[in-house]
Length: 267
Image (tube, rainbow, N blue to C red; front, top):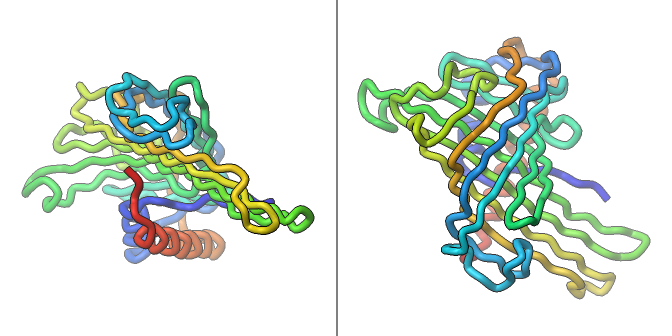
């Protein structure tokens, strides 16, 4: 069976598509440099439908749950890189995915591959007023699989997604627009943190009967970010393979966004 990572979030897809439209520079062959980002914080709300967090059938609000999420980014030759004065990102999928994540809640740990991870700095005045600088970073990791085992007739479906982000106005918590330079942060640095976790997987037997099911969602409020192994800036020019990767990825983004619009959100 094949595991495919796809994006979940409209904001990431839209910002990535805008990047392609204006033709920013892409480096196809960066040097490898691993950076680890560790988020710690609280689970502010959500719902554990089937016990994935160990509290089946319960709302997560008021339970006092905490989380630790670890994101490891490695610069791979097949990933795409964008480096501009007010915008930068790194992304990829399948074997070229530069991000992988794990998150632990209430003693339960989940692993996520990733499709797209971004950090960007933007000084668009419409976001916070004339003369204001709006800064934001995003990490998006998702594991997606929808595979049929021809030998047994069993279908496996997995859709796990994690978003962790931060934003602020006139705080200068991004040393530059280069995604490598994000450093240790807390709310005291003027960062408004935000996070979401979505978990769903099931199996169907050969006659289409569901034989297993797991589902849970959580809203996350990070309180700190610790960064180790900061690498060097990336810059370069696009190669055909890099453009193909980006275009194909944005197609996946559109597919997932249409699917989300058809499916109502769970409480």
